[in-house]
Length: 137
Image (cartoon, rainbow, N blue to C red):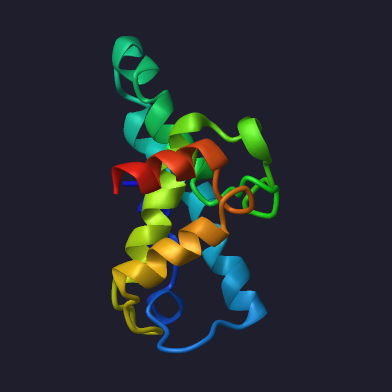
């Protein structure tokens, strides 16, 4: 669900088997905004009670590519300005992306992915969530 906005990305960019151009990268970076629009269109007819419970899902869709140090997208939020639920999904999403084969890369081993996540503590990821992720792993 967090990547629902990728439905609006052209397949030629989404499944490109190689590096993206800077233009293509910018198109990919629009998927959280597209996801929020799709999500809002789906939920506009929902009851108020149901809608109030969907704020968490909307935060995940929109903010899961923000980074702890403020270098993420789409809004370059930093630290605790990033909703908690999006900070959790960010680390899980990266772990999944690293350990999964993609058209543009081979999968990483579990150990390689965990080393990377440790290196990104306080940069890409919330330090407390990183510590908890690694402890529970």
